[in-house]
Each structure stands twice: as structure tokens, then as C-alpha cells.
Length: 133
Image (cartoon, rainbow, N blue to C red; front, side, top):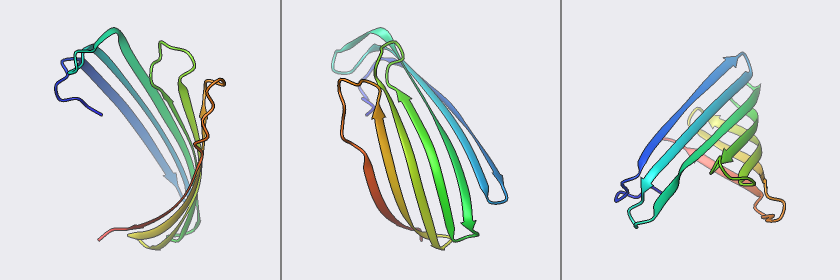
């Protein structure tokens, strides 16, 4: 979370690309951040803290305007100058659209931390209902 009292210099950048062709979807995303300075609680960031991440998504619409499946890879490195802190998330999802603004989504996330000595049981299965009005 952002600290409004921070005097650290923060730099953020990112970009994404989306390509759709008929029933296929391909998306890519990259982000980076750099913090240097003092946090509001007096904690000094002695070294420049650099972060990076990316995501790649493949999707296919099985039934036009009704059913879509997605496979996605998320990668996040919270400090590129340290080892064993990358988190990879593999996501499989399927959505059923009742209308353009209403859908139900089933999603399974496999979360893989890079450090084998600190395994975390944090895989996730989710059912989401979304309606916009």
C-alpha cells in the first residue's frame, strides 16, 4: 500500500498489448517499479528497490458471446536484486456470459513461490458472479 508520508522517489512504468482475432485472444503485460529514499515511518530504503512482473494470457471463445476459456501466467519479482522471491501464478478460467454485462466465472490459480524452503499452500479455486448496471 502506498504511504502518503513517504519521501521516497518512486518510478513506475508498464505497458500491455492485446490482440484479438476471431475467437482467439492474446494479451501480454509488463510492469516495473523502482523506489529510492525514505519511507514515512522513517525506514530508509538503503538500496534501490526494483520490482518487475509480467503476464501472458491466451483465450478462446468457444460459443460467441456466451462461453470463453482463459489460460494465464503471472510473474512478479518483488525485489530483482534478491534471490528466491519470484512468485508465478498459473491461472485456468472459464466464463459463461448471460448477457454482455453479466457472467459467472470459474477460476483455478496455482501459485508457485520460487523459494523451495518456504512452501505456501495458497492455491485458489474461485467462483465469481459479476453484474454491471
